[in-house]
Length: 76
Image 1 (cartoon, helix red, strand yellow):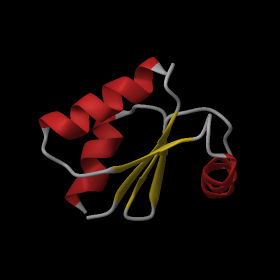
Image 2 (cartoon, rainbow, N blue to C red):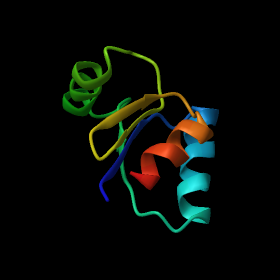
Image 3 (cartoon, rainbow, N blue to C red):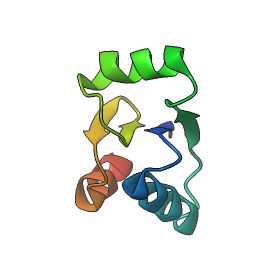
Image 4 (tube, rainbow, N blue to C red):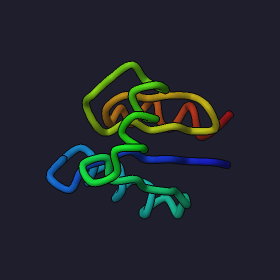
């Protein structure tokens, strides 16, 4: 399972997403798009969005912290 989280340090929903993944013992890769312009551009290409969090679960893009959608994507 490949989980990528595009986030910023000041984003409350990003913190919730990280806590969710840690509580469920789901490994994830986090990119701080506030300090990594290349990853910020990658995030926008994938999602069409400038807002965070953007979560990529094995190619399924979820914008925001939508727990039911995240759980569905993790079950695939």
